[in-house]
Length: 173
Image 1: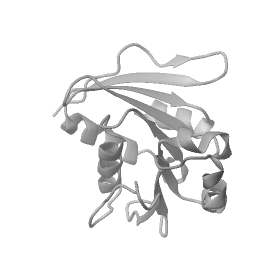
Image 2 (image 1 turned 90 degrees about the vertical axis):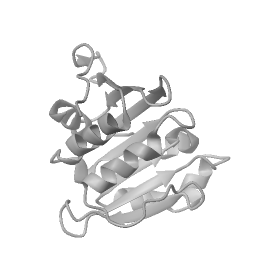
Image 3 (image 1 turned 60 degrees about the vertical axis):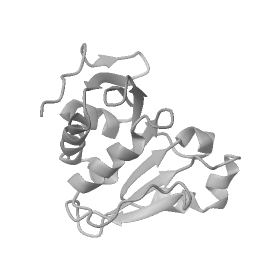
């Protein structure tokens, strides 16, 4: 089980954004990446967004990341509930991980109406699928993960760091 190294170098743009590319050949690669991400010191207070078409592997990555953080029990997609809290014992005590799925939002104001501004103001890891459905109302991501299905098992992955926390996570991978 080896994770393909990123292709190219970590690239920094003039806006201070950094980018890194990976190719995952299998779900084992996804799980290995999730374990490396979970081991990063700043992960417990980061905001990660997951981008990609249906079936690109967003929820699969979240499940592997939550498992790597010690989450037990069933991990379901919050497609209908919009938000699912999880206790992550491998993070600092009482650290919650919130898994959001904004796929069903018809209007970005639903993010505000749901009271998510208060949740995002609290400490803890936040993972959001379909963040574009919340538009500019959600805070900017520390790390945006873009997944593109090459075939049934392989994924092209691009990571964009948008903050100091995101750059630190990216550098640690």
